[in-house]
Length: 80
Image (cartoon, rainbow, N blue to C red; front, side):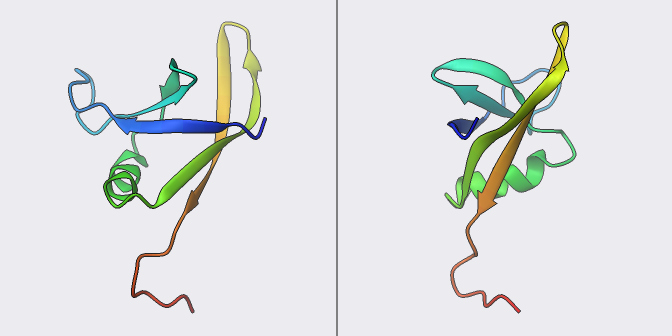
């Protein structure tokens, strides 16, 4: 828990050209949910996202990994 994961685009993915893969120490852990992938792609391009392992659960045949993503504010944007 708490370890930083690597996020990267996987445009050659045959199922989803917007796929964002989650890796830890060179091992593919899974993908960002396809409904959130476009936002993650934007944050990756702008170098504004950092993600860490938050929780593991599920079952041995169907494990679930939850990450906590921190997204930096876009330069010039003031939070209200």
